[in-house]
Amino acid sequence: MKKCPFCAEEIQDEAIKCRFCGEFLDKSGKLKTKWYFATTTVVIALLCIGPLALSLVWFNPRYRTVTKAVVTVLVIGFTFLIGYLAIRVYLRFIDSVTKLGIY
Image (tube, rainbow, N blue to C red):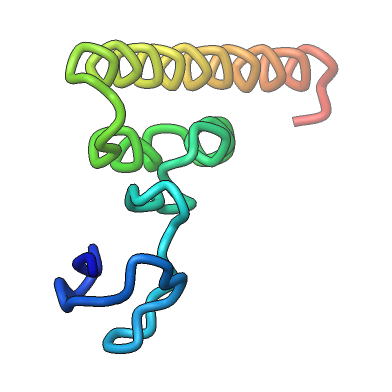
């Protein structure tokens, strides 16, 4: 007999699903990580929504604090850089339109 990692009830050693809570048990005996903590998901979220996805980095139990801080600094720095470049492109566009006499 072993304890279910989800509800702590006694279940058979060969059980693949707990009869008390209904959770499937991983064959290795470890808890399976959530899909939103997968590195691929975190990277895609950071590329799509930028700093709004930093909570996925900070709540991820697999990352160390140093890694979280470095990723945060990089994402915020990259966000400011993209914002600065977008403003420069906009101002150049307005300047070009003004020189052409369209605006």
